[in-house]
Length: 112
Length: 114
Image (spheres, rainbow over the protein chains, first blue to last red):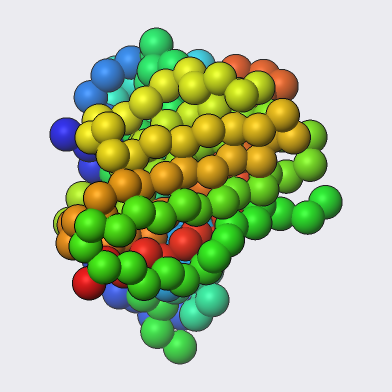
């Protein structure tokens, strides 16, 4: 089964609004990462948060991590049409030995 | 630095054939991972190589194999292709300078099995 599960599966918003995506996972992790994928292309790394961090910012992105609830959220502020993409969380699980486990992603559509 | 490159970008094969996909990592990156992406199963880990050694393998049949060369370039091979092997195959490289596992992905090879 997938380690990470994103919620919602799809999200449609207007330009300028904020978008929040959630990710839940099942086991202990070293870190959790978020990636973006545009229309069936390669994934782009957005942000990595370590298990001992609670919040991290990068530009318009804000990621939180709650290891007690085994969950993370990605907030994109002031969204743009160019943010339209699929967003995946990926976990580097403790003892995973050099692999990431991805969720099935959230499809974000930002309408102009 | 140039990004991760994958060749070919698109491939059409028929059932029973075999296929070899190639991946060139970012210069200096010694770890290469492969993932299969399908609409039904999402992104699934295939295997990871570091300095020509496979360090981890996902839950795929033995028809899926890979290798890494001394220059860190990697290939994966799928033998006796099945319809269900149609997917986007993604390669990712990582510097492995720390334990943090940030991956840099290539554009993928779209494999269609007829």
